[in-house]
Length: 137
Image (cartoon, rainbow, N blue to C red; front, side, top):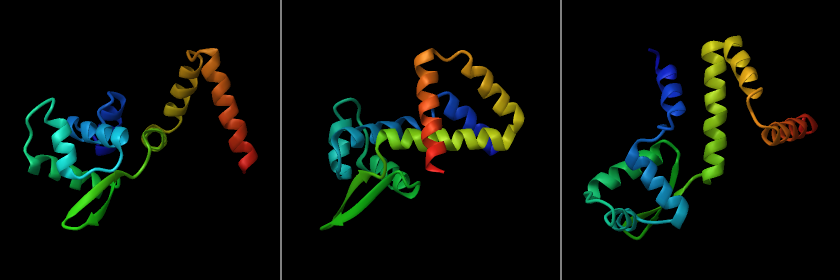
């Protein structure tokens, strides 16, 4: 199985981020900027984790472009680089591009067929989005 296909399958299952990555992002989206220590203290109410484990995850999320950081004194303050909605839009776009790149017309045909199953409210929202894009061009 190719790497893009693995990413697509992980995304389809909702597992784009690892469990701890997802928890860290959820905490930062909910509370805003925080240090590693802040995040560790919040997560420790649910489970015991080492400071270095959370720090490693946050550094990796920064390297992936999901977190921004600013040095304040001797520590970093991290914040989400995108809102949750912006992140969802970016991931959805990347998944769609990946599917079309990997499967071409078959992916487009499958997506089109799935649209027949979407309720009327969502179809209307899709039409509004498409019209907005047409006007922007």
